Image (cartoon, rainbow, N blue to C red):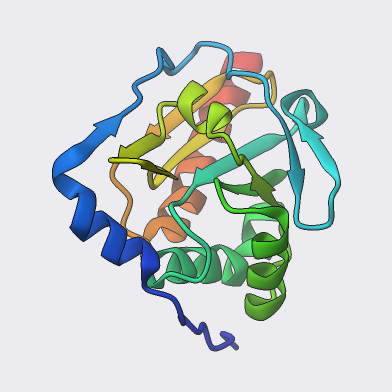
Length: 186
């Protein structure tokens, strides 16, 4: 049964509309097949996460603009609803935005999210992954997802994401990527 996903704040949407014409996007040199940029960020429970913690597993690293905004809530809830299917594929999910640890804690609790949300307050990790969006004086993470393979290399990059359908696409793509990886290793 899917849990009800509430969205109470429209600040992100308003900011995007207000400052859209001042938009600058940080483009990093990330490419499929290359090592993923290392990161060290804290989650909503104040636990530290590094990329190296996930070597040996597949990692779905998804960037999103703002906690409790409509599209971000839809996307997070879709990942929540598909969490066990993604974990069954030996993959972990990490959400990343520039929101505070406290904001992440409220969002994760309110939406019953079973995966970590990482706080990137200065946007350094978002910039390293090409997901930093500057809207005038306001910075947000752009809605992007990166699948990182078991060796810590970028396996797939999603620059255009439909929050409603993205989680289902991740499952299909993880299966495909893992099948190709297994064929190479045999």
